[in-house]
Image (cartoon, rainbow, N blue to C red; front, side, top):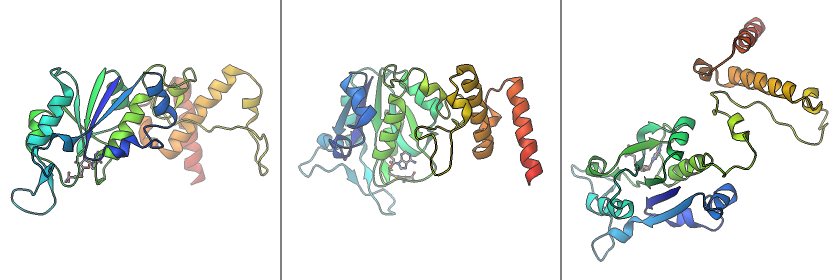
Length: 250
Ligand code: SAH
C-alpha cells in the first residue's frame, strides 16, 4: 500500500525515532508492505513568501489553508487516478474505528490531508476530498497526529505486517469485544498468580477461557459494545449470568 500525506509539518512524520519510523511501522516499510510518502504543502505555494494560508472571509481570526495551493498539491500528488481516496483529517469527519481501518486497508493507495490552524477552505472539500475522518470528538491543533493514528491502525491490517498468526483477530474490537487479560512470567508476582487454565496446555480450554474473559471484560468496561457483538447461545447465557451476578452485588 502506498500512503501519501500532505502536511505543513513533514518533519513530524520523518524523525528517525518518530512514530512512523520505529517498530511495526518501520518493519512494514522495510518489508515493502507500506510505502509512506510525505509531501510539504508549502512546496505548492505560488509566491516568494511560500504562503499557504490567509485570513478568513468574514473575519473571526485564525488562518485558513488556501484552496489554490491545497488543490494543486492534492491533484499533483494524487495524479490522474481519481479512484484514490483523498481523506481529509477533520473533527467533522466520520468517526475512525476498527471497521474503518479494515476498510481503508483494502485500498492500494490512500492520500491523507492534514489541516492546520482554523482548517481548510471549504472549496477544497467540494472539489477533491472524497472522505473525511475524525479520530474522536475533540479538536487537535493539526491533522498530523490524527493521520499517524490512522496510518498505524490501517497498516496493522495489511497482510504480513503483524507476525503472530491470527493474534490480531483476538485483539480488542476485531470481533466486537475487548480482549481479555494477558499474563507472562513470573508465575507468582507480589502474591498474585496466573490462572491455572493458562498453564495446563489444553488449547481448547484456553480458547474457551479467553473468549469468556473477553465477554466478561466487555460487559464490565464497555457494555455498549455488546449491543452488536456476535455471541453464541452459551455465551449469551454466560452474559446473563454475569449481569445477574453484578445486579445482586449492587
Ligand atoms: N476549525 C475546525 C477545527 C480545525 S483544527 C473546526 O472547528 O471544525 C485544525 C486541523 O486539525 C483540522 O483541519 C484537522 O486536519 C485536524 N484535526 C483536528 N481535530 C481532529 C480530529 N478530531 N480528527 C482528525 N483531525 C483533526
